[in-house]
Length: 125
Length: 330
Ligand SMILES: C[S@+](CC[C@H](N)C(=O)[O-])C[C@H]1O[C@@H](n2cnc3c(N)ncnc32)[C@H](O)[C@@H]1O
Ligand SMILES: C[S@@+](CC[C@H](N)C(=O)[O-])C[C@H]1O[C@@H](n2cnc3c(N)ncnc32)[C@H](O)[C@@H]1O
Image (cartoon, rainbow over the protein chains, first blue to last red):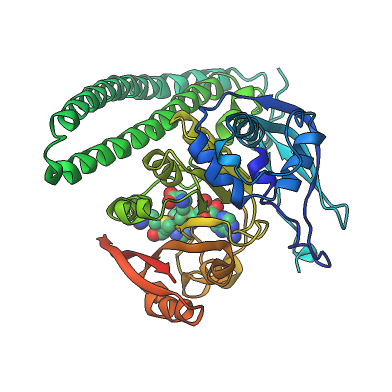
């Protein structure tokens, strides 16, 4: 699972959970694979993200070095910034670990890179 | 070897001390003799198929080169451009199918091997192969069929419309083997593709189909789109379990989930229809495969109440099944 996915996942489908976002990450196996860098494409993704959450996720994996905490207005022109964003969004992958609901503490395992977000009937809203 | 597999136990129950029974050995040998030619034949066929697949692959590659040349030569003939694009799309499709076939062939071969091992020895059923095959086998994951290809065809037909939307995030709900979303990912390299499936084995297979085709796919084992934030996806596609069944057959997480659609074959689909308005990004579009028994007019009505227009993209009759793909947009 890439951090782009973490940026979009919530546990709000759990009964009694309001936001369920962001899920806390606990990774036991993190893989970094090279992905072709396309500055124009990364620029288009940035506005669709919750940057704070991305920064926090990168930080919890030890990949926040050099990643600014806020996005500057003219970020599309900043190659260095785009490269860092590209790296944390698309190149860092969690293979094994867990995601934890911030409100209920319910854990969701990630195995072979696939998060298991299935709930039991009793857990659903 | 420990002779405790349940199948052998039941044989023992009926025939007494079969364990040291020469009859059993003769029987096993006889069985093996019977099976071996079939397995050999199967192996030979698999080999032949692989050779023709290799040839097909080479053909695809040379077609690709030709297309590249044609494309360059045609720079000043824009009117022929759509045809070249069509050919390229066609090439993509054949490539994906080829890769899926190759993956399944590997499994068939391994399975044939497993049969041989089972026939030759009555020892434990749990071989290391088993897990590997189980996790990928089409016994557990929906095998691409006409409906899968109709959905691919619908997307292909709409390629221009779709690319005009400049999609960033695409999602296939219930991706099964992953053929459809992989095809979409190949057609739009500048997108990020996501897939969900309620069946974990389907998620695993989707991921591997995508990576076989060098598509980066983000798979999540989830019910429909229940754990995604709102307003993210530009394209959502779904080939649902559409067979009309008893309501109680619905709701599994195994292979039954790939076809059992409950009342009107719409029990799963209807739940997604209510999620679509929130899940789609502004300007987003949703493609849904249905059959006549699902009452497509009713689906259009439901979506109209959510503020969506609908359109039938493509229809096809497969044996006695009338399949169609509808698209919904605001
Ligand atoms: C979504 S798939 C469609 C497959 C493809 N269009 C075809 O008919 O070859 C649903 C099909 O799976 C078939 N099917 C497979 N196993 C089944 C089962 N155990 N019970 C009911 N239908 C099943 C049904 O006949 C149904 O037409
Ligand atoms: C007809 S198969 C289509 C598979 C694949 N998309 C294709 O076209 O070949 C339906 C798929 O939806 C999945 N599915 C069924 N119910 C689901 C649910 N509630 N959430 C996610 N996936 C589901 C099944 O596991 C199966 O893989």
